[in-house]
Image (cartoon, rainbow, N blue to C red; front, top):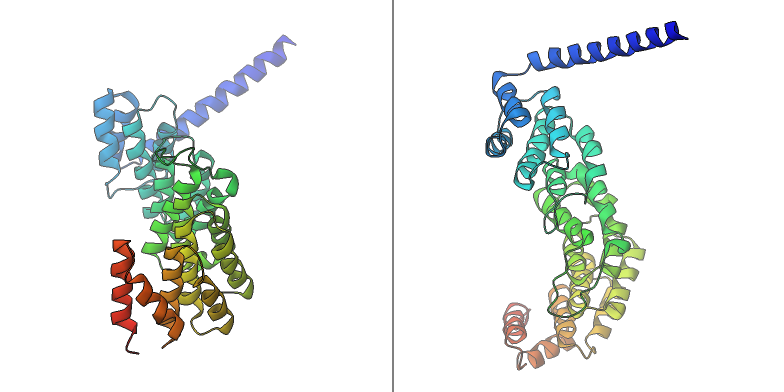
Length: 312
């Protein structure tokens, strides 16, 4: 028994020595700049580590071992917030330079929502890795991640809001990315059940979807009727017009929205009809009515729309 324990202990020590030797071998192949910055992160004081992390976030040198160490330090509970932010940026930069975006995304996703409050450094790093991040970010759009403020004065930032914001940023940088179409149904779900801010952001991204199905049209039309937020209803009306132009079914939904008691919805529907259904009489009449509104912003929008579409 004692001999067995001796061999087991000897084997474990051998493995640890081998792992340590491999790590040192990896470290020895680092560029001197990377090696010095990582050494500061591991042994330096907080301010020196912060500066080293900031430098790594903009360095042009890359190495798989450097990326590994940077992520390990970034996710340590005791790493200061400012240093952590730069380290996640540095990790994303390393994985981009190494052309390992997919591997980087898989490594980052488990840490989504674990750090930060108003901002999530992990989400920022995921955004840096481009359009392949969209399916991962879309998981945060689930209705279970939404919440409504208890009062008009309360500002509530949820994971859904953060995800929607990140997706909008990626879609703006890569407007023709096929991954946008891949998350079309998830975006629609966000428009249907999301917070006001998240729903609007999802609607902005949905406007970039290329493949629109009859089911998409039906669900957007339902948003005009069912959404809790007037501004989301208005944006859905705009989307229907913008995405489907002269579709008679869309025209009918927008015409029904002209009768809404909500002036913002009437304007959105009238604007879409005037723009995409040239010379639509009732739409122009609605715009003329809203041009006399007590709401200054809507009044100015309506006058601009009349000037733009009234003579077509």
